[in-house]
Image (tube, rainbow, N blue to C red; front, side):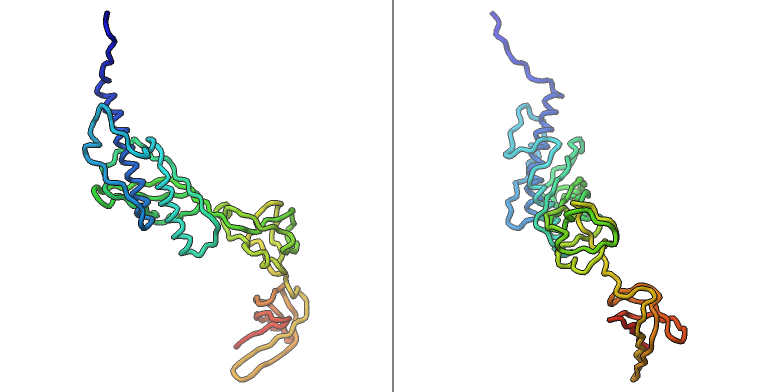
Length: 277
């Protein structure tokens, strides 16, 4: 009676499994190195030996082994730290950040690296869909780029109901709600008190975040309204009557015509057009 025996796998299969396991070991070390580079006091995994990159019939398992083609949480944490630094420098108020790092292509062959660091590529910003770079700074000289998605959440003003362009808007028309700032290309209203006395420049849909560039101060003077024109010079001041030629708001430039027919441009303050010579 013959006993069944298991034959060793073909050499090319054994080598393929060895490369996958070795890459997993390297990825784990890279993740820890990235976290250590972005966060003081973090533990860095020891460098995988060259022997780990050689073919083995039964590769040793690595702790917290990353699956080929994916990136472990420490890389996400390193990118989050980079995003926090960038947002602090830009003085962006937020409550939390979510970072999603894309997959690493395991077909790319990289030399063993003792220490790697994440960085923001020139011209990139850790905002929305972007990229982060990873460079080896000890043991090799490679560099890769990974797709990332950075979401920045903060409470902003959200419209209760739809409102047409030109309508006045105030704190009672909105609710403060956490929102992903990266979804809008312009700054959003983070304080409902800033809406007092404002008017919409475009239609606002229900549930839509209120953008700062969609607000204006209603004109305090309309075209054709009578205004005072004050000309201030060195040691003298002249006052005359005039007519506004364009609508204007407090503190904004306004075109007006004097009694003599001269057209001037000055700053509107309390229905007075101020000019300085």
